[in-house]
Structures are given as C-alpha cells and as structure tokens.
Amino acid sequence: MTYRRSHPRLVAAVAGVVVAVLAAAPATAATGTGPAAVDTVTVTAAATPGLTYRVYATREGLVGRTTANGHVITSRDHFVALPSRRGLSPKNTGDYTVRVCTTSGSRCEYAPVWDVGPWNTTDDYWNPPEVRESWQDLPQGKPEAQAAYQDGYNGGKDQRGRTVASPAGIDLADGTFWDGLLLTDNAWVDVAYLWTGTGPRGRIGSGPLNIRSGPGTSYASKGFAATYAMVPIECWVTGQSVSGPYGTTTRWNRLATGQYVSHSYISTVTGGTVPTC
Image 1 (cartoon, rainbow, N blue to C red):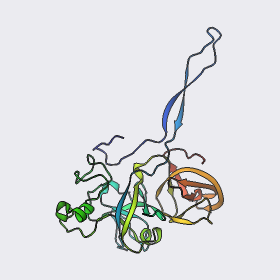
Image 2 (tube, helix red, strand yellow):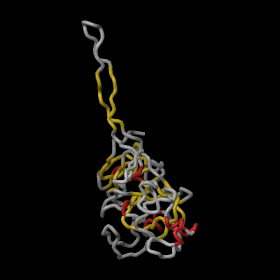
Image 3 (cartoon, rainbow, N blue to C red):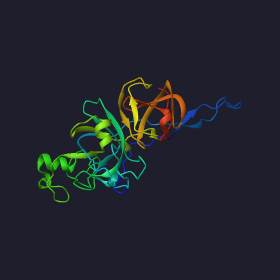
Image 4 (cartoon, rainbow, N blue to C red):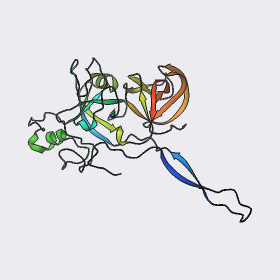
C-alpha cells in the first residue's frame, strides 16, 4: 500500500484490475505451434471493510443545526462526524462512509460522514503518521482527544486549548446512536473506515434500511444502512422477493460482515462486479 501526502484519501487496493492471461492459440500448419495469444480479464478485488479501530462514541444531537457539509440535522438523523475534513462527504453523498458496530458486534450501522468533530478538526487519526495532518507522533488509530484524556497528551487539551472531557473519536447522530446501535449512553464502538477497503460498494438509495441476518425480511435486523451510505458488497444470493425504490427483485446482497440488504434499495454499484455467493 502506498500513501501520498498530496492526497489525503487512502485507497487500499484498486478494484477492477486488468491482468494478462496467456492462452494457447490454434496450431499453425507450418510449425504445429502458434504464438501465445494474450487475453485480458477483469479481476474484482474482494469486498473488505478496510481499517477498523475501537474508538469512543458520543451522541451529537444538535437537531436544527447545520453540519460541516451543509446538511440540516433532523430528529433521529443518521450520519456521523469525524474530527477531520479529510473524511467529510459532500452533502447528500456517501463518498466517506463508516461502519459503526457495538463492541459485541450485535448491532451495526453504515452511515455517511457529514460533520466534523468531536473536539478537533484536523485529526485524521485513521491515517498513518506520515500522512496524518496533525499529531503525527500518535499511533495510527488513536484520536488526539483519546490521548489527551487518557494520557495527558498535549497537556490534556484539544487543538483549541480546551480541556478534553472525554476520549471521543466519533460523534453519532441521534438516529444512529439510538436506533442503529440501540445505545443509551456514550460508549466504545468499533469503526471501519470503509474508503480504506476494497471491492464493490453499493449506494443505499433509500434508508435507513434494515440490515438482516439472512436474505429476507423475516430474518433479524442487525442494524441499519443510512441513505447515501456506501456498503461493501461481498456477493449476492437469491432470497425473498422485495419491492423497493429500484424495482422488485429476489437478489440480496451479502455485506462484507455477513449481513444482507435487498438489492431493490441499492441505487448504484461501483468498484467492480458483484459475484454470486
């Protein structure tokens, strides 16, 4: 993997890599052999969630306020905030999406990054030290606020000189906090920074969409995928017929962590071709 200071977005691998495959050509009458013919095939990288770190999550709230990308926060909204604009999606997109799960793994939500915070605004802690915008002496995956709160780093202060009162590395909108993860208080969560992963991504066109333990609506809900979230699709299976905003289909997409979503709610798929399971 190569990281460049000139580009803050990290991509772990390129899906749809073209490789050369040698295939025997028909024999010629003169020699009985033929030159090697070169065919090209497209190989799609496996869908992976990318870098994952355990960080402390706090509830954002702030209903009626405007986020860093211009979104007006609604009641029980579904998005997250990270403390750097290097992970901020433009309004109404999921260019930067995270998967946030409880530490037990019992509940997850895929949500776009639509705000900047908590505490800092230049702390892309998911990046390696040579790329990280600020606090390059901290370990990759450790937010500055966590280091300040737990270890007295930077005198226990954030970038504005405020005393850090919690180790928070992510803020969750109310819907993500209460409905997606079923949290009742701030908590440690496992966050996958999906833009650092590989393989096909499906864009959720209408949500919050239940992610299921199997390919049908009778299977248990394991959380949600928010509108505009880009979810890593590992493969697809045939399941219950579902009618959604993009038609009626029996196709269910298996996400990289084993849950399923109906393809009738996927507006587009990018990053490669999704195989059957």
